[in-house]
Image (cartoon, rainbow, N blue to C red; front, side, top):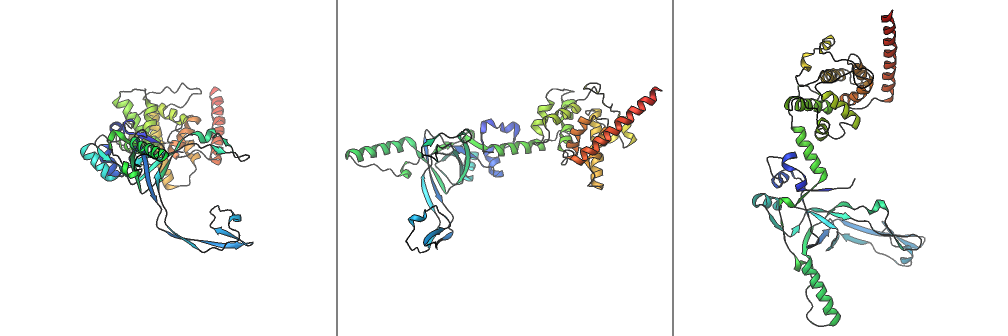
Amino acid sequence: MSEKMVHFPETRWSEEICSTEGPSAFCLRRDVPVYFKVPTNRFLVYYVYHAPQTRKTLTFERIDNVPALSPRWGIHRRFLSGFEFEPIHFEGFHFEGFHKDLRYLRLDDSSLEDIHLSGSSLISAFSRDGYLIQRARRAKSEEDGTEVPATEKTRDAALKKVEFREAILIGRAKWEAAVSKAKQVMKFGRGALPSCAPRDFIESVSVRESDFYLRAVDVQSLKNERLQNLELVHYPFEHKETMPGIYWMFQAAYEHNHRLKGSEVGIKPWLEARAPDDTFSNKRILTAEKFVWLKLDRRKGGKPRGVFDLAALDDWTSREPYEFTFCSHGLSYILAIADWWAEVRRRKPLTPKSELARQLIKPGGFSPTEAGHLVFLIGGSNLTPDELASFEGFLKDLELSEAKQSKLSQL
C-alpha cells in the first residue's frame, strides 16, 4: 500500500485527535512527522544527498581471460577485455541537483517550535526527509526499443520516502529567468553572462499550521489512540484488551441507551469509528449493533431464537455483575459468557472454541449464526475446521434431541 498524505484542515484535529493542544506543539512533543507541500508554481527543490562515509573496495577477477567486475555494476565484459585493473576505493558518495518530483519536505524541530510560539516560520531549507511523487514512466519496447505507454498499474502516482542531507527552495521565476537570459547571451554572444548557481536564488516560504501535511497512517493511529482512551463508562471486566469488540459494544450501549435515551440510530457507524481496525466485519458489526439495542424482538429474523431471561443466569453464574440499565438482556448474556470464557481459558488455555460456541447456543440462547459472530468477538478468531466440525455435530445432536422432546410432549 502506497503512502498517503492528509492536509491538516482535513484531520478534524480538535474533534478527533487532540482538543487541548495544537498540532505544532503536539507533533513536536510526540515526534510525529510533519510535512510541507512544495508549491511547484513558485519553487524548485534543490537537494543534496551524501551517502554514509563507508569505505568500499571494488576488485576485479579474470574469467576466461576477460576481467569481470565484482560486485556487478552492469559493465559489459567486452569493454573490459585486454585490460588490467587495480583495486578501486570509494569513500562515500555525494550528489546535488534539482529534483522535480520531491514534493513533501519534513519540518525540523526548530521550525515547529517557531510555528508554535509565533504562528508561522520562514523556511528556505529542510534537513530531515521527504516524499517524492513516483510517476509512471514510458517503457522501452524489448523488440525495437521504441517507447510504449505505461500500463494501468504503473500509471497511478505513488509517494516514496527519500533521505537527503539538505533540500533548498529555489525561486522558480527568478531561476528560470536567469537560465533564459544565459541561453540568450550564449546564443548571441552579447551582454554579461548571469549567475546560474542555484544557491543564488534561494527563497523562503512562510509556513503555518494550516500548511501542515501528515502521513495518513499517523493520522489514523492518533485518532484510534484518542478513541481508545475516550472511555464513556467504566468497564468492570478484565477482558477489555482481549475482547475489544465486546468492550466497544458496552460503550456503545451506554452512549445510545443512556446518554442518547435509547436511540437506535447511528450505532453501526459509531462502532466503526471507535473500535480498532478489523474488530468487526460487515456481518459481525450487524450482530453487534443488534445486541446494543436496548429492546430486541427475538421472534423476528427467521427461526425463533432463545429468549434472554436474566433470572436464568443464576442457574450457572450470578446475574448481578452483568445487569446494567443501559444493556439489553442479550448483551448481559454476552458479557456473562465472555467472563466465563476468560476464566475457562485462564484455567485451561487449550480449550477449543467449540466449547464457547456451545455455551452461546445453550444455555446462551443465541442462533448458530449469532454464535459464529460472537465466537470471533469473544474468542478472538473464527472456529478452526476441527472446531467447526465439532460444533456442527453438537447442533445436529441438539436438533435431534429437541425433535424427540417435541414428539414426547405431543403424546
